[in-house]
Length: 495
Ligand SMILES: *Cc1c(COP(=O)(O)O)cnc(C)c1O
Figure (cartoon, rainbow, N blue to C red):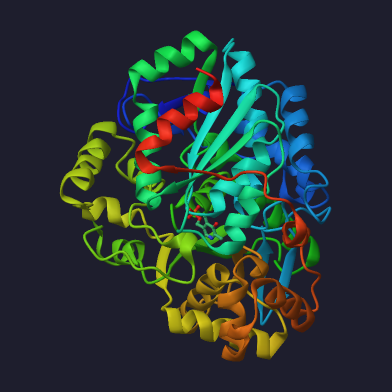
């Protein structure tokens, strides 16, 4: 049966999966959601013995019903290959009674690779299907992680070009080196003199510029987005929760008929929403525990039913979770509003206007499967050190937020169900914060010395992603003023 997608902000839009992927955002400002969440049609007993790629097909075929079997399998084969440093793709490690689902074995050693390695292929198939003849130009503003993962995903994918803007003085040295050494004739990286908001605003302006769109059209180009609100990023993320549950059953860590709790370090609410979709597909997930850092807008929301972004933006050691507007939460709000688009729109308009909204008691009652928690900067550092000293396992700062919240939840709830923590980045990506947490004496070392020392104390090889940038030549050195972004795009495209 064909599954269509509708918008969270109007009742009349219906598009196919490939159209939703191609468009990214619904024209009314809403997000695309499936008309219903499909139920798995294979048992966990069967899934237990499947590879990651086979599991991906079983899950994604239910969401992307206008893709043929051959199209989908080809996308999956191209995405989950030797770019990952383990055949398991997403291995599970046990430490101190908790199961860590390692989502950082892809090209850029953060969990964004799980979706961004397949999105380019889904997008090019979607373009073909809808007879979109133009070359796709991906425009991305990044504060560090998304840019590199998108560059790696789109590099040398035929029919696409990717242009990434980053704040010249606003990313870590490792993050910058990762981006400016990116290979691929279709990749372009531009530093701007400004902050992340300037980069994001500049990109948004170009998306909404009609004159530019007309020039692009005449020259055979169209813009698209690799942002986390694209349904083509959400669906691939559902896969690893199905996979993890099946593998825990296989290893005996989870007994048949029992439920699994999941703790997710959360920023834009994409990863935890994927876990919620997996639960709704029939995966035996119990609690969904949403872990925040000091920017605990989501923790407050789950406690009180009030979402309030009017608060200081705090820079933490888990920068990918420093966010006050969690875009994907809108998909959950829409669902607990009884899929009533006008009710959801009113709440989102209140958020855009006053920066706050409150859900009804009836809506809040539907959030019983969720629990919120947060970890302060000090707790994060202590969690990294405690885990290292007790087990030898080294967590990155984002995973440490979730690990700490998971432990606090267990202590206060006495909920003894099997616990899975989504491990979203390799500790080698945030080496300085991680090593300083273990021992402040490390602060004197350079970034690459720190990577070697981490490798030594953790007994883990330095990942290829770090080895490569040690000696890689800088291939991108363009820097522009913040109001020069459009000119540089035109120059790149030759229009
Ligand atoms: C993006 C990111 C997150 C947050 O994920 P969301 O899907 O935005 O909630 C957490 N950890 C790391 C390392 C990330 O890169």
